[in-house]
Image (cartoon, rainbow, N blue to C red; front, side):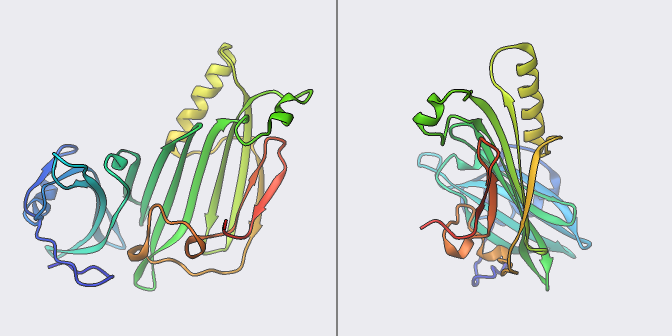
Length: 259
């Protein structure tokens, strides 16, 4: 039996079909699920000396739209406890969601593609005996034309550039750092090489050098428990202050949730 912090949830894992990274370490997982589920990705590691497994699975019948879920287990002395379980969107969404157990933390990264590319990564650490959200990292890479009015685009001196921006929010210290780096678009070898290098850093979650940066501070806030985490969560309950730069490198502070 495995207990979810939201209530008692019993999962008898029976027919898990492993499609990626098959491993004998997951033998216990194969023996305990009751749904026809497909493991898309998983990560294993230790936190404070205990073993943890984070799994992305597509749940449901192959003939129907599967519902991707993240399931996180803690293991000790041969016993496996369900730490958290939540859906991550509609069928197929699991392809852009990557959980990782590393650096004494649980990370959940989600990648998106719309008018460019973007990711958001959440970091959970054990605080007061419970996993809580302590950090949020995000990056966005898109042309400057998006979000700029037609009048501004037609103004003398404006040229379309690639905007590579990001934020790092530390909820333990109540600080948010935002940054921006811009580079020219086009098919010149120098531009293509710069874009390729930027995309490689983006995929690794690394930041560029020589970016414009700024930092804001905000009042101490509640650290959201992993058991209450919603990957697509929005609204006041999930809002944390942030900042960003526009294409003119002007700093903007976001201190209230959008209505």
